[in-house]
Length: 316
Length: 264
Image (cartoon, rainbow over all chains, first blue to last red; front, side):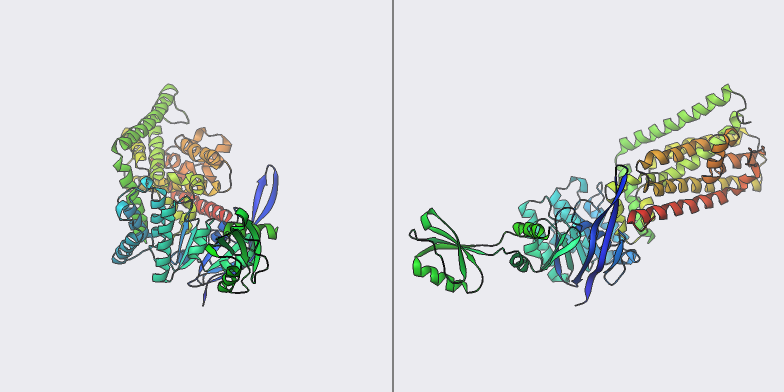
């Protein structure tokens, strides 16, 4: 697969004026990463870890202090105007719609800005209005939209010119559960339909779980992890936990193959066993059944927030 | 490509017209402001005879020309020196994500139609001044007036862009640049012959305000100029406009480079 984003030793320093003293803060520090066309990548990190700075360099707003970025095969700063036609960006906190105009008119202006043919623009706007369910508020001025409605309109605005790369900075921040759900479903469908590459920053691990094949964790400007979400969990030792409810109080289930006893509750009626993945779940359950009769079971997935916290803690 | 700018501007015009009462009040307010400044000039020049060698009828021409050209520039470029607002709200970053030059997007992002009222005051003063004064009309004087109008608008527009470029650096930039923009406008409505030497250097040459009204009017009326500013320079208004734009674009490029962190 050809790469759509590639950075090499990307570094960005800021000079901060601290009363009269000037000091240099390194926001992004020798970052090298590669995103292949068609991938869906979650870019996560604490506030101030360098996520937004990286994105600004990738799209050509900021000039790197050193190192380089290539986006869609272009140099972002030099080729900013060509690149703008191929990338769609939504910054969670800043709008590219016109607050006093109806949504539909914002789309018409953006179509003119991207020099889309009228028929093509109309068809695309209609498609996005349908899939993002914008129909009911297309005629409403942007300032009157709810946060969820505005975010959907922003994403439609970023996708109007059919970019091959979509960059979303905190797209679900502040949205209710239902709005998040609809947005995620839309993004999955959009990627399936058009093969759009997605780079997403978020604090919401649900976004990553549902949308991303791959996670990049950035910490103090450096890449702390690059791989799958499951791999991330394995790296920091967060494992899945099997919770068994037994018919009768039972002694602690210690020493079963492929497990480690974590704790027992209500006198051994409920027991937590850490799965290390060395044997099948069927074998574990069979071993449990030798000791007691199973009433119910559940599996607790690793808490991703916790996983990320551990990554931060480990790299400090 | 032009249609992109036209689409944004048309939407701004629609938005301003859709609040009719508010727009009408803005127009009246701007008109009264213009009238108040004109009254100030009237009182000054009728109370004291011959300030800077100008009668009231003559200063009407300077005031009218400066106020009209400034207001026309203000309609199209006035919002540009509001740059910190664009930076704070992230609008400027959004312009980087679109396939047009950032400055062109900034300029066409808004238009202040209410300042038309102010331009009306300037146009009125200029017209009355042209009638009251004894002008030897001919192709040369018409050409001079036309050059002065076009160059004046260009010079003041450049002043706004210069202010925007400098605001990338200055922390409380608006306060600082307002001194130049509105100070420059005020200086332009007065005869340069009363300017102290330091003002003559700044508003005669660096930000060539004298070329927007005073010098063309002295050339038009055949009056003597000021020290360092002979009246024939009135014909050089287009050169002053070119210089202003060179300065403005340099400041803008410098400011944008600073903003993007490409070194100052």
